[in-house]
Image (cartoon, rainbow, N blue to C red; front, top):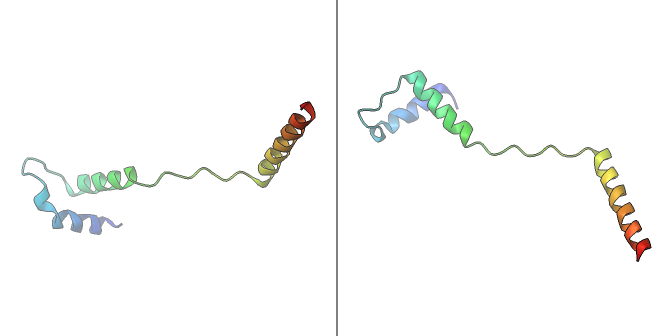
Amino acid sequence: MTDQEIISIMYDHANAFSSCIQFTEKGLIDFARAILKANAPAQAEPAKSCYEQKLQAVIYLADELNKSWRE
């Protein structure tokens, strides 16, 4: 979203602000960007490497094999 789009949206919704709240255009842009950043979706955890996935599979299978030997 560009600064001009943010300013345009502010002017479209200017009646939502009371007369005692004042923003400079820069302050309003910073406010809007902070809101957008705060509502951004959470970052997904990075995918495990192929090596890590295979290592976990080997560990799981070894644990299962160990359990079956104990029974």
